[in-house]
Length: 82
Image 1: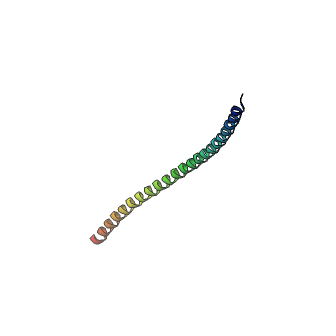
Image 2 (image 1 turned 180 degrees about the vertical axis):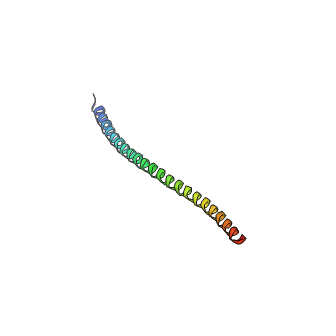
Image 3 (image 1 turned 60 degrees about the vertical axis):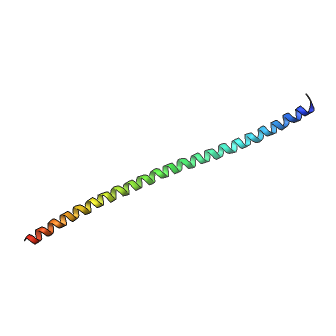
């Protein structure tokens, strides 16, 4: 084998090692992003649940207020009729 070929093969070996190192770094970065994404999905799910609960509470409160007003109006009518 010629010396040029041996030198070229060594350069290729070095380049392969560099690319493998970069691949490992990208794999680590990818895993980190995946974990962060999973955490954010869980957090978003909890936020959606809280917002839904608040919405449910507000709907119940509005219904209660309407019923309260209706009861108060009936009491006023009864008081006035006496």
